[in-house]
Image (cartoon, rainbow, N blue to C red; front, side):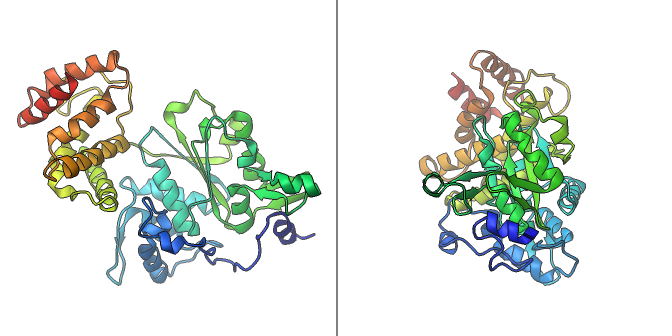
Length: 393
């Protein structure tokens, strides 16, 4: 039995009707969900940009890639195409990080996106898969209860009991499907998965093979297959990766935004995208409050005020960019439904308190000290101080 025959027989539907390099058929009803989905997949939300990039892309593409590495990087970082089409940036950060990540996927090494919570690991992972394979849904969500079957394969137990192990009874995992179809698979929160389940990936990533001993067969990955995993810096003590598994990955560390301006820009962009899907007020009217949220989070996160004059105690929470986006989005919703539609300090105060005070005993003291020693004395922040004092009382 040839490799392709083995793949086609082991995975129902694999190797039938999809030409090399062609996008997989859309799921039934996917087009109908386009504008109604609360959170469309990247390949649907940015379909126009991906189509424009594909049309303008005349550079070499790796096997089964929808775009060339250059076009994938342009999709993530943004730019203007020769026909005037504007590609919005999906990631605001060092260009070299994106280039290394894209280049890794073009080799036979898997990609590990590492960083503290809120550094856009999942966001970057999704958009990389969408741009490379046209499908970001081949996803394994890592948890403490993730079983080995989620990475390898499972069984339809009704068919298994009725007919025994067979091709029809096998249920492929997202990773198995990606191997057989030459797609990009994603594993989120890899370090939350039990260590013995993590190590299931070793053979897949080193030999590019997934044995099926029950059938006496195997699935060999076809060209185009690769895997993106994400892991949280703060979860190192949960389920550390074995050295054998870590060697199979090229690790790219996603940093926090380097400057306040960059972080404000990221928060404003994401809040605007989320707000449009929820019919919330436009972001430009709340830029000043976004700047305040980012300033508070950065100062408490760094343990020092922006001018470097006052040292601060840092709370137990991460106070990431993602949490700043959540606070501002919640504030916009308050202003839209219970205010005048303009984002004000009273709209974001409760959200900031909830993000900062995770440990009611220690964090509340830290927050009160920050309010009285920094916020109270800051010019132009009196309304913000009063709003925070009111919700903190």
